[in-house]
Length: 192
Image (cartoon, rainbow, N blue to C red; front, side, top):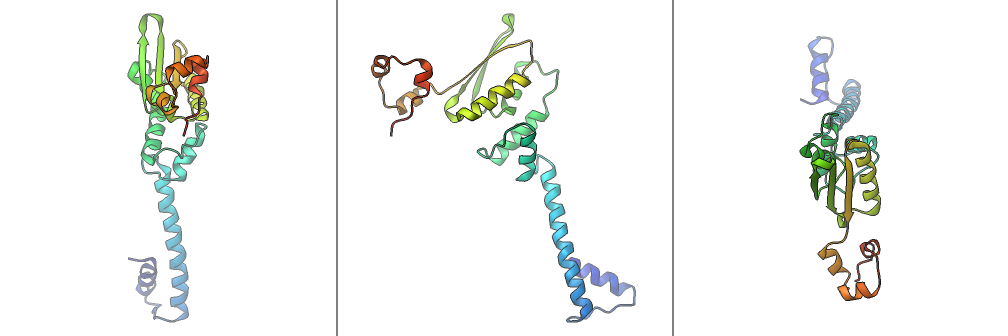
């Protein structure tokens, strides 16, 4: 039932009003009904955006801003997963699977974790070619805040992989002759 019908029925039920089409009362009720419908649509939008699991727009952005980075470059589902993982982190998360949750909450999607228990060291490797330098810097800053302080953490988000090197159209001999460091090789631009 529309807002107009609800208003009309309520007034007519009192016995004092008869809402006929094309009357001033009908026009006034239509004006009220239009505004009520607009407000109800706004309330529905706010309810949807209030919860991460249903948010699609500004609700995700608002929550992402709490953690310092809006992630428009990711799908809505990926953004939700990252936020939900971030909210699930607790001070007692010290297992490797918990560390994977922390990594996911920072936006890492392709990574491996290597644990050296006796040395309390975690090494994380990831495909850096899917992250911009700004994204990598943000990920590293977040990890430094979220990972347990007692662990030594090494994170390698390099672009050096076979696909990345092949895209540069250089042979190993050419790279060797250029006397480049791994950092310089990692930052070579792809040739078109």
